[in-house]
Length: 510
Ligand code: GLC
Ligand code: MG
Image (tube, rainbow, N blue to C red):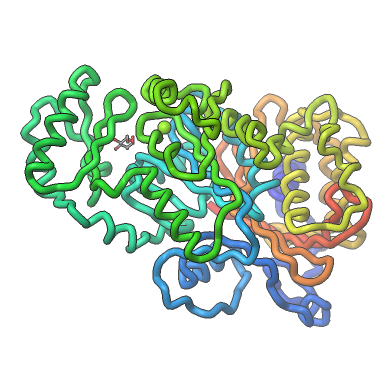
């Protein structure tokens, strides 16, 4: 929320705000970024419950939590295992495994409209009980490059380099078990030497040559012939390899056990062994190296509307009788959203889609229908996302300009609640929010776009939720800005998501 408030305040007053409004209590205690008096019931009840988190090592989990959540500290036992395990107290609703280029990211859309819709939906409806996995041909290095260019959410797990590297969390810790498995029957030096005998193969960038992946390019007319000959040669050398052709040009030579499909099967097996079976797994792709994903047992798959002929042809020949594969009509991330609806995997309308000039909520999931229900796990998180989205739409003039719409923002703020700005100023939250009412449409021409990453909700005590997130914003011609935020929300009947805002604390980041 607050980045937007801050944005409005910058527009209005050029910070800092009147320092007289600072009322920082010396007795207050920093709890997850929010100051509370030590006598507050939260401290008496201090316990993280319902902690749903990612697939990672316990040791790594602690580090990730600290870096992601700023000041939230936890005491956890070290897990002796150094490999991945599902650290989740609640079941995984959806394991969404998506390719990046031309599946999650639409390179033809400089505004990343579909991806922002996906991000918005994921943060609001799935992040609290589902896992996001990227499965890409890119090396971690090229993935980082893409992450700088496109508003990609931080995944729980990254499968890189065409299924040869499985890395966990934002710190990208490698799965050593997977590395050892791939060593079997693989000798990179020998494979490279044989490959270099083919003069019509051109090596790709150095960054794409990985311990278990040799990548080159070849004209598509020569591809089949080369693949056949290369495969025979490598076999004669005693190597067990897999050759994957994608995008009508890329040729990857990998260990036989590698590949996007094998890596996913390995992950699923690992989760199963920890008793964490995702209720649904959805794979998403657009090209040749994604074919394997659709062959993993028990998964559903979406071929996005802009898929390449190599995948569409495969689907026509081998996939047609598989009712578990859906061919979307929409491009990239919009195709993924379509498939959520097609397979009834959960909500498919993001707050961004639900709020528009014809109103701020859809009849299907109206706020009224949620009114009066007790706040459940995920409600506070959804409130954070909806609030941010409405704020963005307000200043972009993408919702109706009337008091009723604006009230959706003010009526969820608890009496006496406060927010702490990055520069340390503390202000009444109602005042902060209200000051944005006259700012309707100030970003109409530059269109502010925001996305919320790494959102987490924890129930601290009965009726009290801590939500932490990273927020990013960008506008036409503007710089990308980010901040960490922490908020305390509490149950209140009659609110759109059954909760009201009590406290917000924001910290700027580069
Ligand atoms: C990505 C990788 C490249 C690979 C291609 C197809 O573009 O960067 O090395 O060949 O995917 O898998
Ligand atoms: Mg792709």
